[in-house]
Image 1 (cartoon, rainbow, N blue to C red):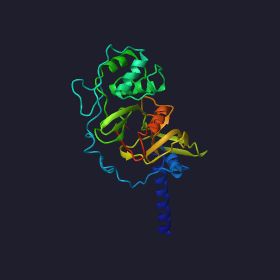
Image 2 (tube, rainbow, N blue to C red):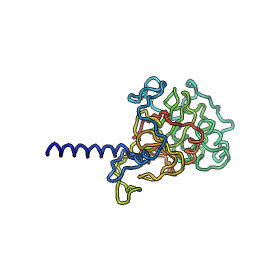
Image 3 (cartoon, rainbow, N blue to C red):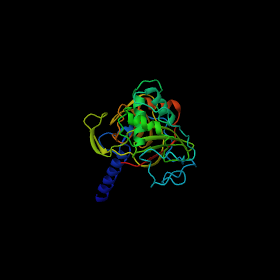
Image 4 (tube, rainbow, N blue to C red):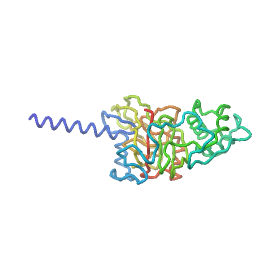
Length: 302
């Protein structure tokens, strides 16, 4: 009788741990039905085998990046990079002459695109993607990330003489810098594009399960560090996860995904997922820049 009770207790513990691993956009422990990650796994048809080996240009997933990534003690710059030297494989950007002025929306949009901060178009419209690109530049430059094109931001854009770079300097991957709250797209060792993002807040939470009335989900809002890869995705529209709606997600570990959101503040605010704007997520899908099996390197921050 004692042996049987111990076996039942062990089985119960394994079930709870399995539910925690499947929690969507978090490291949640569910008190009820399985959360977003579990339901997505049951319906998605593009999930890749979990035993797929990483490409030869990146280190094994069980170890920290070594030869293809900078040492983990190196941090992204907190101010504008030096103007006297250029790192290898970097496209120089000239100083703007005459200097940019606050309110010159089209010229500032063109400058942001020139530097690699993605936005929809240099059309003179200070809309969502322009504000997100401004916020991303401000984060990289160490300015107050309010998304406004003030004189300090215009001056910083004017004197920027090189394209901003991720920490990864080889391979093709997505880099999530939680310290900077930025998403980098690195192609053949070059930083091609940068997006504003918001990752896990690091806070504990208990919230109602939006798919199971009366049930609650408890967890910690963490975006897990490490080298992962895109292993499943949902291409069409909004999806009702247990912790809220997400747009066209690309999952890279458990229920944690890069996905579109209507809220991308200048601080970590998600349950663990990597939020970008809805137009940015459409661009990610339309451009094909983040296909299945793409490595995703997460580092820094909470």
